[in-house]
Length: 228
Image 1 (cartoon, one colour):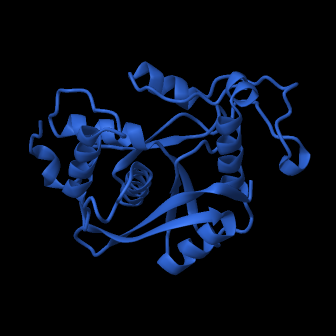
Image 2: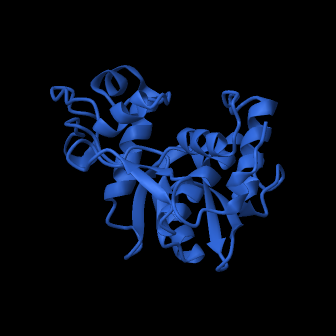
């Protein structure tokens, strides 16, 4: 849970008092590298694309695998998102017991939220990039479902959404869907910092999941223009 074979995409956004701008993209393998990236970027909020908690599920002492004797329940935030029509990967007993890759991703996310090595004063929140894009796309007036992120149309749609709210966004600056998702997570963190995000779920029910809130006062007027 401290290091992974696949590098994590990490994006930093800067606020100049009027607009957000893309300031850095990094590929990081170890948790310690992420904390260094946060310090270098002078980050105030870290938005992680992964669960901040569970509804009963727990790791064995020392973090070496899951205690599968504990079944737990469904996170109320994930249940609420499902009721709103979002498709998501559930944090459940079946997930951690049957899917090795998913169980490792969830375990590492939990470690990032609990890691005492994080910079002091850094707020950590759970982001949901697919949900963030879907919410903003609806706010922009698009009626068609969001295409898959690995398709050319899906990539173009996501870059267009990010470009409405973040300066410096381009296909070259965010060269793959991992980087694009990281940018969406960073945008969620920035909007939360600016009071333009909403939380779904409760701490008692498995943790809160954050999404952009297009109805918040002050969200850029760019969201009033329609896209296809």
